[in-house]
Length: 166
Image (spheres, rainbow, N blue to C red):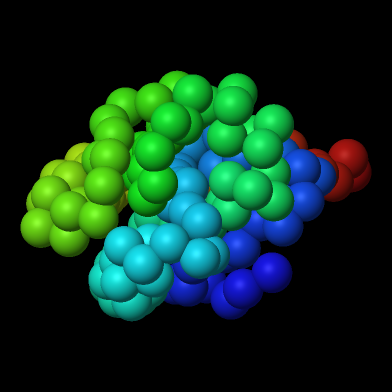
């Protein structure tokens, strides 16, 4: 497999399913390039896809050769190459058919921006929960410390003084 910010080649059904599962689990946008290695327009658009992958780390870019993984191509109803499917949680949210670099760039930017806003919302929600939890913990610690101090002070102060019986 490829490193982050690169186009990941899926050469087996297992590799494809693993990437699809990861994307669904992480709720990441997947841009899938259904391609044919021998077809000129597919080769011409490949560097554009690689550039988009580097610029959009919040998106996972996959490449599937339609001849290598016919069952995957058929399942996703790919009739022409290149076809770019935009998947979110296992559902097609957009599509580009053909080596239309401007349309591809525009749609990647549109969906990447939406994915980035969702990620920011999730992160700020997690930060708010962590802050509230830390605040509650600090309050509980302060209360426990104050109670402990009061208790130990009270225990150290005698309430009855012994009297001498003469």
